Image (cartoon, rainbow, N blue to C red; front, side, top):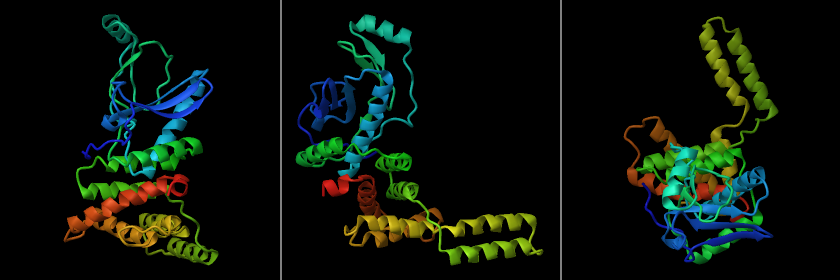
Length: 306
């Protein structure tokens, strides 16, 4: 479990957006009077949408806004998408509402669309858990800028953010580093090698297919492996992506060199190197890698909010 440090905002709700009848807030889950800086569980609450589809689209978009903002200030969030859930039936909602004296809605993780009612209460687990506490001034600045930019995450970025956030909940530095390198891998777009390099790989494939001394399974295995060589390696793609973070430094290294060291450590951990990597070095790399991945996921916020 990560340390339960909190979001550094002293009010009980933070208005992210207001236009016409539409409003979007960041609020504590449950106790409406609780200050954000005291809350461990948060929700993004929006209202004023005319249709269910419109509200659902906006809910997904604001989820991305918060993801960008949290990544920029190096926070993690668990939106509950991968957690087991138990659904409260309509009959159960009605039974509970009659006994507590106000409308009740069974809450599901992720984006939930519902018709607003006076006194409506939710019954379920909270939707967001936040870790760490950046300064109040920085939280305000980043959240406000994220709301103005409305910079959506693409599919790989969403997966990367889930892996990034999941790393905060891992018990060991080894598992944190592995999840963070997995997050980087989801962001990589392997580019084709040069024409001469691809021609060389094609020649090796043809030579493999023509080698009568190899069994059929050996030829198929080698051919499949060689096809991967037509594109750049993960290391090359990772260093190319890392250079987008220049001139920042991580653990005293330029981004590309830092990525290479982290990927070497990842290989040492996953391939059973003996002796095992020094745990203090792994912990140090994992701590800096959290910043590295957060910066990659921050998008335009990285330059808009230095």
